[in-house]
Image (cartoon, rainbow, N blue to C red):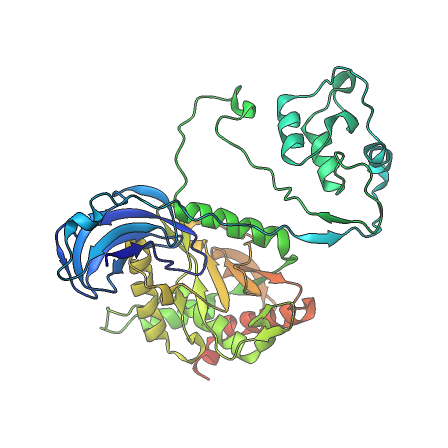
Length: 436
């Protein structure tokens, strides 16, 4: 019986992918373990190996096809002795339909901001069915329709009472669906996503300059989804410190002054080690939040943000706290090369307990990052710069770096984050601690 080759799920977050290239042609003999095609996942481009052996009887999904759902049939494999005529008329099965279960929540009594109280009361009032012309912008009408808002019940704040975008957004943010005016406290209702989305054909772009539409890759789509979810669902707070880099620069100079040029140490390598040591000393910051418990990880796996074509990926230095600088440096170089060539294995970018994002090489002084869920923290590393500082009672020129940590307040408290950042600063300024 012919064997269906399915689009594999090559990462936990993958729901669809792009079939980049076929490495085998129809009629080719396939052995178990042979690379048969290249798939662009939500993280990287990877080769897919055959699980069975036989003859590649029919390719059902052509090279370059986007948005191929996981578990969708992409090809047919004939076992030994099977007649190719058996699959001559084989067609692609209907794509699997993913069902989403509506979240259910109970409306609680919440305080309504003073400025929106009058508007909210009018939203809750039973809408009038009198025939009248509604003055509203096209964008306001579209957003209202997307969110199930009865535009007849919205009070316009534009010229002559015209309903504009901000009026609909205020309605949505108040958590009131005007199309259901009979909702009472304690009623159970379905929650509707309120994140605004746009299409390139939306009227909002009509008066803007001509543009070139660059199609979103699978990587870009998953980045957008994950960052939106993280920014919306995780209560972020940020802590910034400044550290004196002179000690670290001196150590780096000494380490790189030897004849061994293969494993030259970078400041980023030293910072990765410093953060790993600090996390081992303060495991309450090497954590993740779940509804059942706060998870404190026994090993420090540092994810490093790497810019790649079309997006970002975070390969992992596993057990960074127990590795030497030469090993960390070598692994960083290897992972960055793989990330930019799209050859990372899933285990090299899935997981991680803490992330470091370094934009210092671009001259960025400081910045805030969005947490890489489900991790509890991410450190943003800025550029080192010379400044005049008071040191031991004297004004000196010192190299200072800015470090900002974004924290998930559900699992890491402010005091814990402050103590951890003080530890990172101490290790950077007294790098002999890296050898302890």
